[in-house]
Length: 432
Image 1 (tube, rainbow, N blue to C red):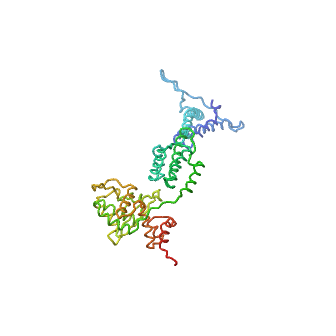
Image 2 (tube, one colour):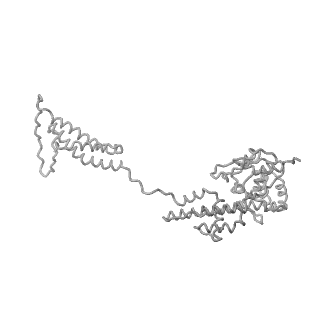
């Protein structure tokens, strides 16, 4: 049996046990198998000795096995004390190989189980649907989403549907071509297009086949081109609130209740001197304001041109007159007892301050109310009049474009041209 032992089989078992991932667990099994191989190697060398050797190998002596006692369990192991050395080696090798066939094969199975990684899970891992929708919705500003929703409701209320065809979209544009501005019609088309894209995603996710957006149809594009040429695409710009308009408005707000008067004074002066957009103005919180010796600093965490939230600081210095925006803001925070949260809030007719912040639409109403109290045409003004008023007044006072951009946050000086050129044109002298 020993002569027929597969020597290469034991070597393969040892190689399996010393797998890099199984070196510690199979340590004892490796030693057993190595002893077996070493013993077998020495035995084979002795069996293959040439016959011409000078001294023949000694004949092994017979084993003296003691007779077991009566009723005693027979043990087939020889008495090591009386056995020959070569017999001990042969018997030890046989027992070692016999044990190695069981233990090393077990170690091989363990090594294979540990070294082979589990099968990767089938399918593509997906994130929670609520988190995906939340982050995808954050790709657009909240004001943009609200505007698209309003435009879509208008389309659906006048015979439109989702999905729709290009004939229905063309009928909608024709009906409101002379009632709405070109910019409004263009935004309505964008809202309808986005609604069809969302609908297509829903259908494709269920295994269906979606239809292309009708907004991209050539007939719709040709119709919009004809509307622009016929109706005109002149963009109506809000009238800027200049410094004189602001001063007259501050004089007339004295008729209001104390808290409403303090709020409007702070909102108008801060919006003008900081050149804030209406969304930026209503988004200011107490935590964003830092009062300094020379004025105050306002942190804008996010704005129209900073949707990713890089942040921008706007410094507003103290004014020498009683129309100082820094003191006006301090007075409003004190009388309204606001220590955290939104700075500008609603005030009821009973002069009670709300806990909620103002909406961007509220800025337009406050500006138009101030203009109306001084006898101006409120329809010509909007919430953007404060920002455009700063740019126009700075151009009148001779500010350089780079100095204006520090406050306004414009990235391109060409954007300021629409504020500067009208002022420069009006200051030109006649050649006659």
